Image 1: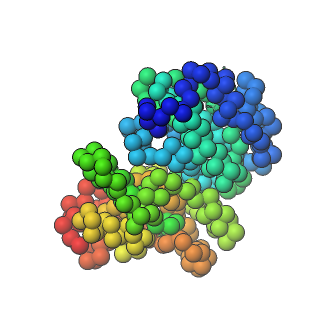
Image 2 (image 1 turned 120 degrees about the vertical axis):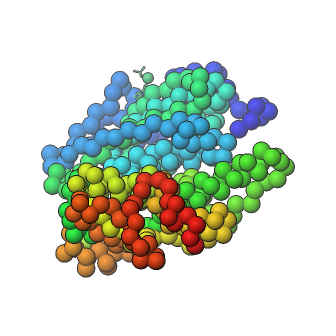
Image 3 (image 1 turned 135 degrees about the horizontal axis):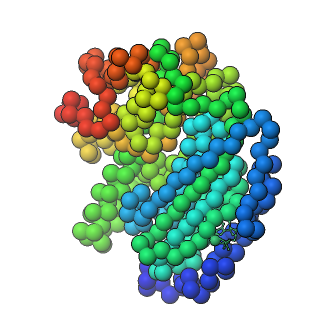
Length: 351
Ligand code: ADP
Ligand code: MG
């Protein structure tokens, strides 16, 4: 998007209602629980009797949660939806309805908003979520996206942060640290670009971590896999702030301690190489303190170990302990250190 592109349509040309029509045209509802979608003063939702309704909201501000200078708008829309779906997954539920509030500056074009919505709608398509409403307004402080997600979970299947017990196994899906390394690459290229706008960055070898940062996927599939394998986690959270911070949330809510083995933390090779070679960061630090991976961190009863072992893409990284034992990391050198939500001086100069 640039001011010199004369093909873009200014928002004023379309007006609020024209814009709403454009971004919501052709939307059909997929979920049984959606009785009425966009178009009236409110949507109508009625979950089945055996289900509980989950609801959560995220607010994304330009310059705080994303940077429009390097975030493709379609990805931004996708991410705004995906991170909300992830919160529902973290309760062991499925996202079903989404509402989007959007505030845009006068400089924004209709096409730019359509881009954001193409991302939102793509995420809804992939995860079977109905876009059932929203609000549109002008903003004087840059782009604002607020997403409210509604989901469903069977009454007997809801998983809280607070259910972990000592000796439960601590598990995580996928791999960690990639989104943070993607962010560091984007920040670095932005600086280089500002220094010399004629240099176009070559980002191809960083595809995986850039995708982790720009287009995170909620782990709805993991919820299905756990159910299929007859595993009900005892506690669960999605990793949005980094493993260290999020395991502390589980421990605090469950009133337990934990032990994590550094060597068990799943880290993708691209994440590992980028951290070590390009940024001189110990890769596990990226996993522990980098956020936005949106993997699921959960605990299971020890008796479920054989079942979880069989599932691809889930790692057992430690276990829960008595609260008096604290939150510990066993490093690759076999030293036990306290897990801190930030700053790993003990590890920083290793590698
Ligand atoms: P109101 O004036 O009552 O807020 P609107 O004219 O803003 O109503 O909205 C009309 C319909 O369009 C409602 O169903 C609303 O949920 C939907 N809507 C408005 N803005 C958006 C948006 N940005 N994304 C999705 N749906 C929207
Ligand atoms: Mg409105």
